[in-house]
Image 1 (cartoon, rainbow, N blue to C red):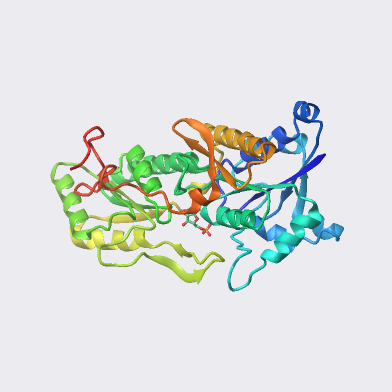
Image 2 (image 1 turned 45 degrees about the vertical axis):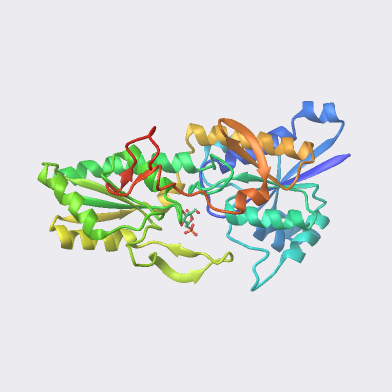
Length: 371
Ligand code: F6P
């Protein structure tokens, strides 16, 4: 028997993806495994996510070179040290109702002779994986997103590195903020989930943290900042999630354009909030958008390790022929869950137990549940 495993990365890039690709490859191509199972294994990378599976023409060598990358131990040897994804990524949705190309994907899966696909992605990429599995394809998922908003896993690749970037950048801003007696509003990513803002803000020691899960009152934020100045503090840092909303208002978007999954790009709340806070408090206020810097840089130790563990577990699922599942991390253990469960809802901050709606910050009491 022979197995041909394809790996692809979809959606926003992040740290840890290359580690996962490396460990799927290394595990599948482990000579001990081949000898033990008496099976041949081949691993290929599909370039640019689902787009590659649509675009490739397997009968054309030039197209195959553009969209398919054969992988072996030597090729992936150093990949885990690098951020981004060496396979490339895109936000292509083969099931986009405006341009459904799922039939083309199915054709290519067959033409390429794939016996399994490892899809590494967030909610969108994994929803495609789920649909393909429902159409009879042998797909497994690996969770990644700096937003950490995937349900059914306590960890998604890229989150820890992004959190460290936020902490480091706010540390840098703090010295200039203090020197000038300024307020700094730092806008972070996360889409509709406040994890990066909440945990990044707490790690960085931000005085105010604003998250999408709780609409905020600008006047109240200004009041909290004025109180701090009254207490002699020279500067303040406000961390605001890109998806946070002023009460009674909508989210702020960079443009009205939507991607293949119907998402608009969030952004701009940091600037409008900074202007409003300066107007209300009279304190000089600057804003910084950390933006894609959060997705860049070398993967943290945790992202390298989790990429490794998730990659190995994905091959375990393939060997067990347990398809239609996503590897996950739950209660300190590597596990797996049905893809359906991973995408059915978003994992969001619990504002009752994890957020203080009076202080606009993390909750101070961990052991006492709120009434
Ligand atoms: O989902 C990851 C993420 O970085 C979000 O936090 C952010 O809203 C979005 O992707 C940005 O997308 P793009 O890379 O298309 O600008």
